[in-house]
Length: 334
Ligand SMILES: C[S@@+](CC[C@H](N)C(=O)[O-])C[C@H]1O[C@@H](n2cnc3c(N)ncnc32)[C@H](O)[C@@H]1O
Image (cartoon, rainbow, N blue to C red; front, side):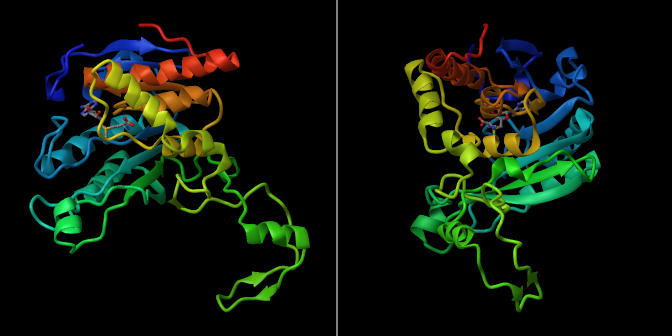
């Protein structure tokens, strides 16, 4: 497959590959939504997990729209994406921060995009989650490293939305390890109960039950020791390194804006069960599909750049290689 620099020229939709649990489509989401591959999953998707092309202020890296045109483009997809959801399904969208070209001012486009999308899709906002990655390199370089007048940008917004006010979700699937203090409290079986200045009244036994871990906060620091145990295998760099090695060996362009594997793992485990169906309309290197496969969820991905699709095959090669060792393996077919 040839490298395309502008995804607006991609003509039609076809199946690029499939695995035991899923299918990757090559084409633009606008066309994919009309295809039988996608039409047949209408009302059946338990989770749409995606990071859309960023609302770049001027650069057209993926051939994506900018400014007002970006807003109308995203808005035009909103209702059709929401129609794919099961009644208790969710949409989780990760949007990074954007900066105005040549100035230390932040663009409000990411937030405007969210509002436009939510309104057009008639969705409820379940929660705003911040995905903090302290290991990010300092940027935007001019204002952070050179002139030293801005702080480094180290988080992305993750917007969790749903059709119903009570979508399927279980925070027990993404528990954090208990802190040292909490572990000793559970051992001691005693703490200072009673009223707090905040007005909360702490009962005598309310904190003495071991629930297996603490409830995750809506600020995620997925690469730290406080990472939910369920995600440990997706943290660190090995998942990503294997993907990059695969691309380098084959002289393919590694995707420049991949979702953190642990972020995908977090929402897949929080909001879906085994065999549920997950959809990513802007799949890129197919982080969503690969983690879904590993977790036993069915998946469908759409990506308009053939080079990224080629690279994404590597994620499944890795799963197959791991499977050979453990005896469980996803099948991929060209
Ligand atoms: C931010 S990236 C997604 C990265 C992905 N989450 C990952 O982990 O690799 C957005 C992707 O959307 C793709 N894209 C842009 N316009 C598209 C369209 N109209 N239909 C389908 N994909 C599109 C881009 O090629 C890009 O790979």
